[in-house]
Length: 297
Image (cartoon, rainbow, N blue to C red; front, side, top):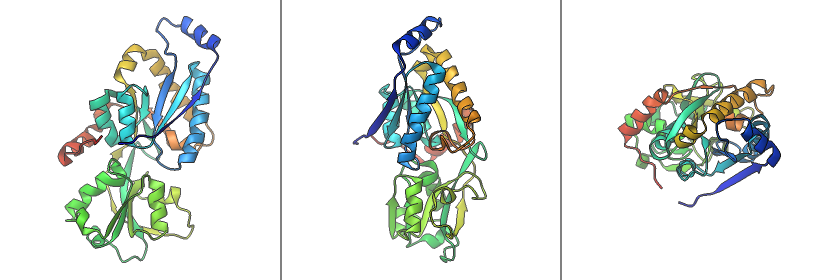
């Protein structure tokens, strides 16, 4: 699979880095690299990545790189190849990152709640009221590795007796914003996207929708899904535990002290970050096992 990535790097002075190394008994890495994926507006993400790198670098006195991967698979491969030390994964992708790249959960994003949801929506008055009504219709998914934008909806659709062949057309859009754009442009009849709350007040259609008068109907909503985790490569953590803890606190503090919660929303979420454990993602691991999902190269 062809991989695309963009590395945004900001460099502090050598004197600062050397002074910091001398002040700690634990060795200090020459730099740290944090991996992210474009989940919404790619341009906004790049701009926020530069600002976040500056902020973290000023707190840690270590050069900070932001590695923007094209997709989830590329991000797992990057951690496995030690191109990234830390990464924000989706809950599903974390399962593979843990197996293949020894990813260790540190934090998880918090929007309205410590969990998020998957929803399938249609334009109001479309005549589509339940999942079975989607037979013969066009539907948009994010990509085959997206928990809320594909996998959880797939489980629900299969339970409703629907398989890929039952749809007139399936669009893989690449991100949630694009799925909403497909729906607004009437390229599809329904879209599977995330919602930050179970009522849909903070759904992708609210965040990314551009048509003010557009109204949508939720025809299916999932059970709670653990929010995206922030992880560290285990061998990096073993060598630099203090740096890792400092980075965790720096991320939490950065979001807490930012008045405008949208400043880093593409990367950190819109409200908080909180400590998390691998065990919290056991339900996701069980889903992967039940569906026999594999991470394709």
